[in-house]
Image 1 (cartoon, rainbow, N blue to C red):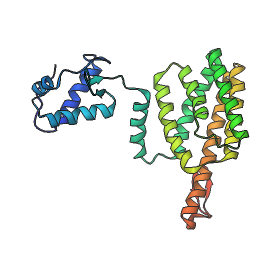
Image 2: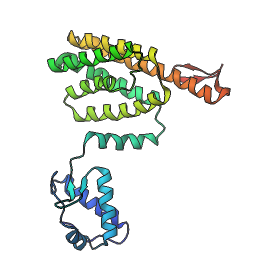
Image 3: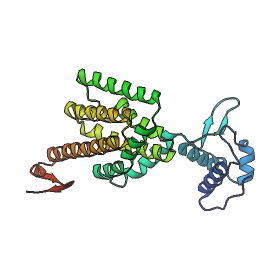
Image 4: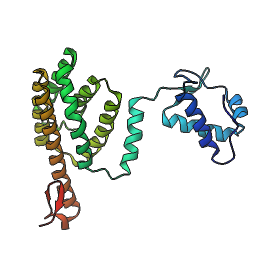
Length: 257
């Protein structure tokens, strides 16, 4: 199945061959890779090089190395969490801003809200209501709900209802970056109340089957979250750099008086 690898970038060549075999369907999720001795012969490499390549494949989510009798490298289906984290890790090095994330959300989340209003199943509507009830109870206890499971799952439910795995993946990695921002900025109870009220408005439009109202409510919600987070970012920057304390925000850009 595999070919002897050239001497340059040996482990990367092994990774490429195995990745292609998995993506081409020659190896299926649940399949065990050939024994180590056989792989060493096929690739013509040392144990150290082979094991380095297998660890790389495991970190990418393509295989799981199981220990013990009957163990060894087993092909896995890459899950949403692994794919999301890989993209999120890449974007962390691109200095993605609150505005960047919000711009992406304004493009696809109103569409998801419209679809939900037109097609969401009864059980999903019940899930949305339970999430909103949970958010309301948490706020009543004085808890900050932003970045919490129910707040995020509300949006994830709308994405999953679309049946489009690309949109689900986009939403997941955007949310992943937003959660990091929210944890750093600590929005607080007033922000949480605004989020909850937006979710109620969204839910009401979706239950009514009003696609336009749902899309408009989602657009407004995304803009509101962007504005709130950017204001918090300015305050945090001012605390960390007092010379920025007089800077204001206009049109999504920082403006000095």
